[in-house]
Image 1 (cartoon, helix red, strand yellow):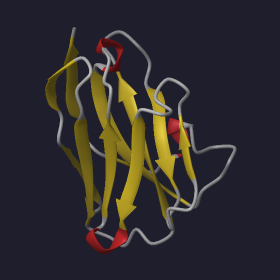
Image 2 (tube, helix red, strand yellow; image 1 turned 60 degrees about the vertical axis):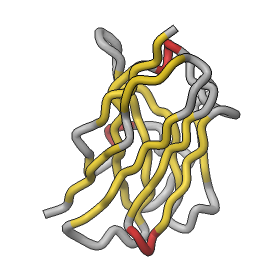
Image 3 (cartoon, one colour; image 1 turned 135 degrees about the vertical axis):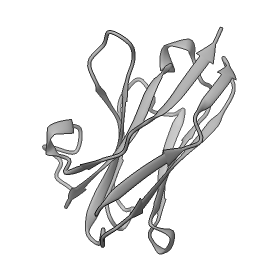
Length: 126
């Protein structure tokens, strides 16, 4: 059974950094794009970043571009989200997700993703 397990969340002061990891298991994720999404209390889920299978294509939400970096290590079946210069508004539950292929018209759409992790809490204090 396919699983995505996030880790690395926690409490950090504004301006600090965190590195999230998402470990995939239970099936082959060859040719799967990976995405990170987040959801704050009372708000809708929003796209954060996505990366293609080979890593050649990366896209970011405007709100995190220049501060967050997505990467992946296919040998370890793991995708990462390096988050720098964190702001209180980055506080949310961060979830990783997987979808077959990478499309410029759907990488930012949560409903396009097939597999989801449970999420990890990131809290940024001011």
